[in-house]
Amino acid sequence: MKPTRLFLLNLLLLALLPAAGLRAQVLKPRLRQVVSSPARKEKFHLYLLIGQSNMAGRGAVEAPDTVPNRHVLRLNPAGQWEVAQDPIHFDKTIAGVGPGLTFGRFMAAADTSLTIGLIPCAVGGSGIDVWMPGAYFADTKTHPYDDALARAKTALQTGTLAGIIWHQGESDSSPEKSALYQQKLKILIKKLREDLQTPNVPFVAGQLPAFQLNKTSPDGRPQINDSAVRINEAVAGLQKQVPNYAFVTAESTADIGDHTHFNAVSARLMGQRYAAAMQRLQHPARRRP
Image: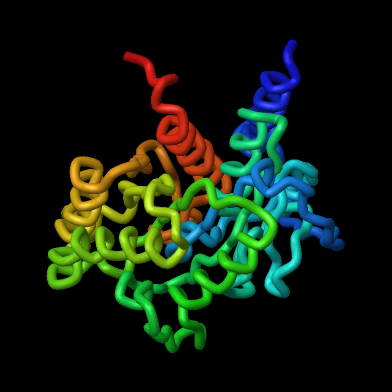
């Protein structure tokens, strides 16, 4: 069996361990290994991970999530490269499994000549309005856009920006905010590409899951959150308006019990979907007819 196929098979089996009835063990890596960046910038592909808590990750960290892969690195809070292990993000102390690590593993497996550099910048609870230049997010005392831009520029000293993945929208699932969401996301994509001087960098956005689309009315009956539906329509609709853009669905995903955050299995599934969409944008000639 080819190494790439074997890696993917092992990754799939590891991801399915909790579903097989084995007791999940919550872990965090005891030691983060700082490493040097690859010598050739063109062989070091960087990906900016932005959005709110479902990009940052809130799933329980399990043993497979701490297995190191020297082909997948993350930019740590100090601006150093280290071997990537979950939690990738550090926005809050509750950061856990998100889509980032699985995304990085699948991107690395697709081309073993590359090293993948993950730039985690998502901020839990952040609405799209604070993902604009100069905007301040009081909850975490951060400037999400400015901080992400600064971290990306640090990473670009040693690598090449190959893509951006975005998962956000929960905080904008209200009638007033959702009506403006598509235009604001379109502006954000344009601004990021301009500020990072990468006008054609692939951008992949994720839709909201079904457990956020369904609400309970005051009388206890189920109802649809029309604003969340509008967010998903906006994310999908940009595919016809923005070049080198794609979106992924959150179908068949489950939450951690709070009707808000992906569980670890679902976060890994989203990471796989992000990788597949990113690869289609990067290699359009390989798309199936």
